Image 1 (cartoon, helix red, strand yellow):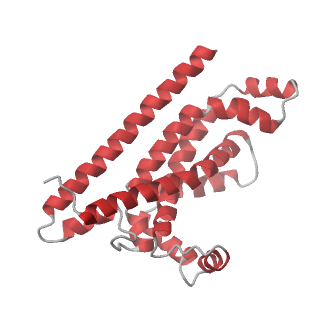
Image 2 (cartoon, one colour):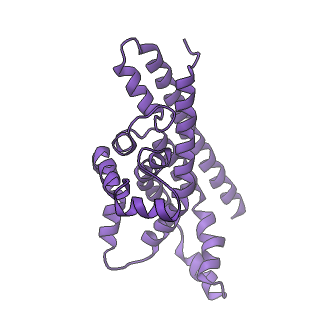
Image 3 (tube, helix red, strand yellow):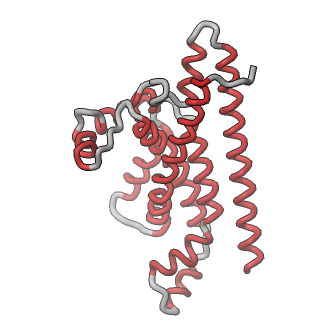
Length: 232
């Protein structure tokens, strides 16, 4: 019953590829965004904060539709990336990674921002008073102290990207071997007569990956905190 078919294996590998790509490109941007929101006050900050967290409250289908309007084959951004970089997002696994990354982005930003806001700002001020540049203070103090939040945000973002459904199917559809990730394959199995066994296998795999990711996040975050505590 747990022998995966070629379609299920392809969906699993594609999901991992999409989630890792979303994490690879999204995490550095999330770190920079979290630092900006945690340490700077500027005009329009609340608006930007609201836009970043909008995917958490908007129906994912709306996010997918907006991506289709912005990055579709006939959209300005879609044509720009196609002409300049040779990257096509619509109905492509790269589009699935983009949709998953956007849905996971608020979770990464929130976890990292909370970690940065809990830091003792006197450490950064002391480093600056001793001649450290803002960049050096960021990489030697702010970033290491934020590691627990970065680890938690990264793994939670990965798990969210792995389970993304609504935005993905709206933007890139469900094309086997091209855009059909685990959630999309699970949905198709549920809708297919006689697909109960396949749906069950895909559900178990999805749950297992999510639970492992959450457990790993907790273990790594605690390990980093213990290490930081031992260095104090």
